[in-house]
Length: 251
Image (tube, rainbow, N blue to C red):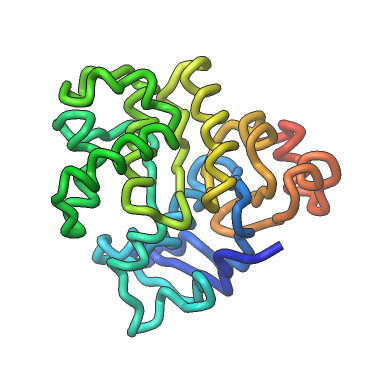
């Protein structure tokens, strides 16, 4: 199994408060890795480290290493824009731009200098198909994305992330604002995406982690307590803290 992202002794502070403590973990390529744990344990903070989104917080300090394709993205020489292009992000609540469906997808490629409709049109179609949305919106491309349902908006945001051809997709509780039917569609999509992308998901839903995750990490109070195959974590956890969380004793 190839490792796509290698996290070594990663710690993070927001001002005086330490939010991550010496996290070391491998993210395997073309697999779904889920991060579980109680609220406030550092899950979202950790994935925001993987494309340096925490950089926008003035009081944030990071130590340790995150190796992506063999290069430490926290080196002084790292190109942060290139990192974020290759490691895309989908947030908890759907956040489409107040533009047409087409323009939501074309926005990223246009920002990279692609203006030719002969290139953009097939790219928009391909991306929407990859996000399992094309059949639902192919006749609504010029309508506002704000008119889509919540589940459709979230798949549109996934498509928007795919349009700039990333290698990794980070998802921060992508289904928490969705109903069960929309959640099932997103989960089916995630299972398809791992054929072409490496996917990392934060979820508060342990059943979801068990359904979609190939690998799982359990976090508690800023520490990675345990990580391994999802089957091992849920069936035979090595750490007592993990077992207590999985069995519902706390959390």
